[in-house]
Length: 570
Image (cartoon, rainbow, N blue to C red; front, side):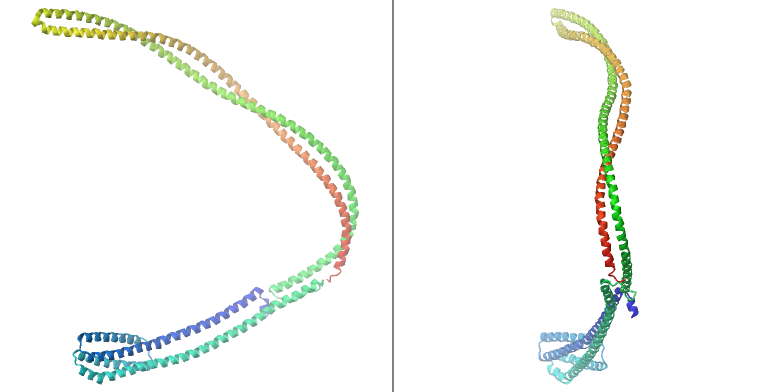
């Protein structure tokens, strides 16, 4: 019992749950085993009695069919019908053999084994006699076949049926005995199962009551102690001792009562001290109120001075902003001038390079024009020489024409002997005329070329003069650009120095402006703080008045607290 009481509540409940689960498992296992046993016995009854009886019943049916087929075979003389009956008899025999083979596989009792041997012996006799009857019937010796059937087969068939009946009856007796045993086993299993269920329920109920009592009794005890403490009786103390949660709860309750006793005693002592302190606080509050009023007046004067300083600093800050903006504009202008100076220097360098290129190009043009002028002069001389040569060719053509005319005259004088010479003279005359015509055309072309050449010489002379003037102008422009470039290079560093100085001035003014803004901000903060202090001082005055009234109320509350504490029993 002590061991159960020292267990934690969760473990007590877990113990109850585990025992319940084990009880269910035991009941379930017993039920499953009983069901399994009944199923096995039912399966055994089916396999060992019901199925064998079905096989034996089918064998008896087939034996009757064979008897009928045998009689039919003895009555008919038609060969086809005999063959059909033989086929049906074979099917019945095959089915009998199948059922008998299945019956052989089961476990037989000694009695059934004896009956089965009698069946096999009688069946062998019937089969032998039936074979002879079939042969006689096929030979249409029906009378002999029938006599053999009456003498041998009927007696053996009766033995076969008796053996089958004995086997079936034995199986039925075995099934009845098995059924009775199953009923007894079922009754025993039910008794065991009910007994286990009853014992399990008793165990669970007993354990549940014990665990409930172990849990509920300490809770009720704590409940009663709490009710007494609620009425102001702090002399109570829990007596339940255990290592579970309820034991810990009892210890915590006792510690709480001890703590409350100390608190109430301390509150009683403190209430007396509060009453005395409240009287002293009332006196001090009056003195503090007077001092606070003096401080408020001084703070107001400080706030007024701080406000004036703030306004002056704002004026200085505004002026510094104006100066700073002017310096920034100067900085922008000097920066632009420096950029413009650098751009001008760059343009001057590019212009100087272009003028140098132009001067070089003008020199090249002057040289080209001089050479062209010389070439055109030479061309004019050659044209004059060609004109003279053409004049000579024209004279030669005139002379040739005259010679051809004279030759034609001489050929005419010669008559028949001069016809060939006349033809040659005529061709020479045509050649002379064509040469004279071509010479005139060439002379006209040469005249045109000489005229164009003379004009080209005049134009080239003008171009040469213009090229010389362009060279002079380009040389002068190059000198001017070099002068501008030198001056620009001297001005640019000076402008950059001015820009740096202005930037330094701007940074200094910006620093001064920032400091001025900070000072102005501090002055405003001081003024605001002074006003806040003044307001706080006024609030303090009001608070002191409230403290004065609160101290009086505190004294009254201390007296009431003493009365309340005196009601508790510690």
